Length: 555
Image 1 (cartoon, rainbow, N blue to C red):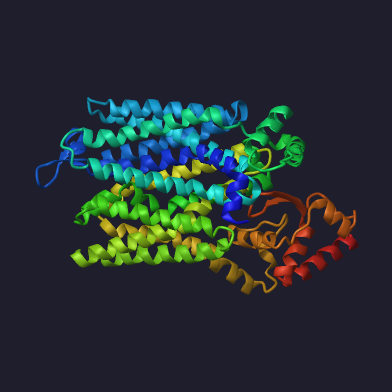
Image 2: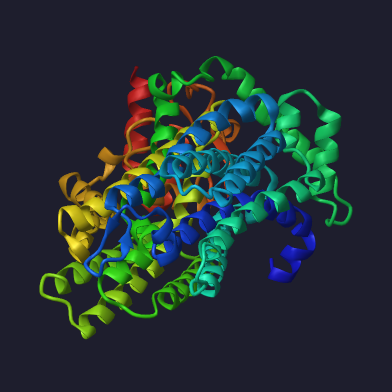
């Protein structure tokens, strides 16, 4: 479908998803504006507690760590609260509460005329409460409102809008950095207050998730919600969507006994979903990308670069193009290939930055660091950045989807806090300086290993390659690309189709499982059907299919 047809058929769904993604704007804006504020001398004059070699007031590494990472404590708590709030009150009510938290926190932050570090930390935690709720609920809402054909790119837009808000924050800071008063940093702080006001103004115009209405037995409201989402489609009939939602409800009711926080650990399938969903968010932040977002200006200032804010402005523009390219090619580039190339780019860039920093810095090495910082940004924003949100939401399905998504975002913010809290200590107190990139190079290397090295070594150790496909069909995260490959060419069968093909002697349990397509469509199928599907792409799996069937008949 052409972009014109997509917009014509889904413009209202896209609009509703865009409104819900204001949470991404809040997260991106806060990350970026505070990065620049930390480098402003006016802010240092008000909050500084030490003096540098020039005798000017400066911020200690502890102040930078605590205030910059304080918001992520709130993010983590907000993500935890989001699960019960979404279960009980719905998506829109959670959006209202998140907007209120950010608005109050933003007002208190701007109004802090006493320059108290403790107050700054508390209000940033309050802002984080709202951002954490926004992040979980936005991804849930987009996954339930966006039609399947645009759901993957729509989820990637979370990172895209985050990039735009970072660009806006950079531009605002660029315009206020030379103001010789506290307005220089209070104006960027005030920008954060605008976003929840926009959300509050638009919330009355978006529908509640139709899936939530169906799950609550409110079929009439669900039908109205489907009509509102698809009002731009001519001759739209909600019966098919309602049937799909009703089927999801019946499946959830059948598995209601497994809907608990404990089942995420005790139930192997729920635990596997949680591992993949949370693992995606863990990988996104542990690579150290936040160092460039939160401390990028401070980092550039420390290595002696001029035009600090201009460098960051260019960085934000580069990342917008990278995320945009990732969205456009979302259904064309295999995710494993994407991760292989982009993580290799990040690995080379991190090693190069660390290598040139071993010796005293010169003007030429300063620019080498800047150029390879751009490479890190491009690699992250084309690959792991947007893909992590998509994979995390795709894996959060079933009766525990709210809990899985909430737990994944908790892991996301926990890793964000760890990186933001430790970065100043590694850079200043430990004395690594730019060589801190050696530490962050470890994580792209690990991702490369799981994406490339582990499957190759497993295949060489077992030529049939079956050790990576234990029941119920999922293996390590390195095998996810095979799942997407098979789904891409529809090499799978639903349970009823498997029964038609293989006969009713095929057991539903323990072979019964559930997986997802690239477009976030949950599919129930049998392990045998999975082997049949894989046989088209991996001939060695056909042998195992025959063995499995033969062993069952013997029993």
